[in-house]
Structure formats: structure tokens, C-alpha cells
Length: 110
Image 1 (cartoon, rainbow, N blue to C red):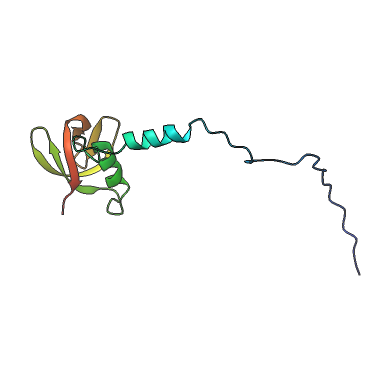
Image 2 (cartoon, rainbow, N blue to C red; image 1 turned 30 degrees about the vertical axis):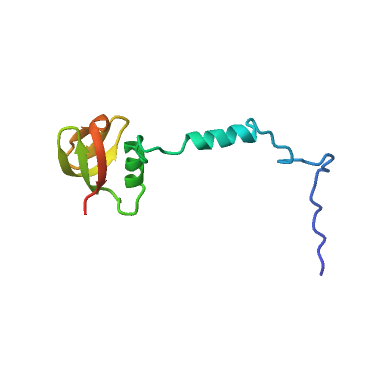
């Protein structure tokens, strides 16, 4: 009752593939260490800028489709529910556009 199955064609691999065996680095170790030293935050520069804070808010587990945030601008402090952002503005649930360039600080309202 044994049936003979048809043979499967398999092409011969004549050369060995050396994927990822040779890696070229464009920087030397000294250059990488200098770059790491330069990127450390100092006391004069804030540790997290506004775009990073917005990224953290929109990627947090507290944000589903809106986030209750407190926005500190150059002129005032606002409590708003933001639903999105484009390249230059935050969009609130009331269709208010808040320029990102005017924002000094932003954080979740508790």
C-alpha cells in the first residue's frame, strides 16, 4: 500500500552564504565615545523636550482616544482633552488648535 510520491526539485546551493559575517563600522570607538559624552543633558538644557513629552503622552497606556492634559503655554495654563496632533498644532476634543511652538510644558492632569 505504499504509494511512491513524486520527487521534489531542489536546486543545488554551490556557494555558501556569508550573511552578516562581515560588518563595517563607519565610526571608530573613539568617535562613538565622544558622541556619547556630547549627548548627555546638562543643567542648561531640559532633559525632555516638548515633542518627546507629546510622544510619551500619545504612546502611554492612559491615552486611548483622548488624554486629559495640562498645557502650560507662554501666556496661560490650560486643562484640555487632546485627541491628536499634526506637525505644528495639538488638536483638542473641542476642535481647538494649540500651536506646539507656544507650549512650554505639558503633562497629564491628575
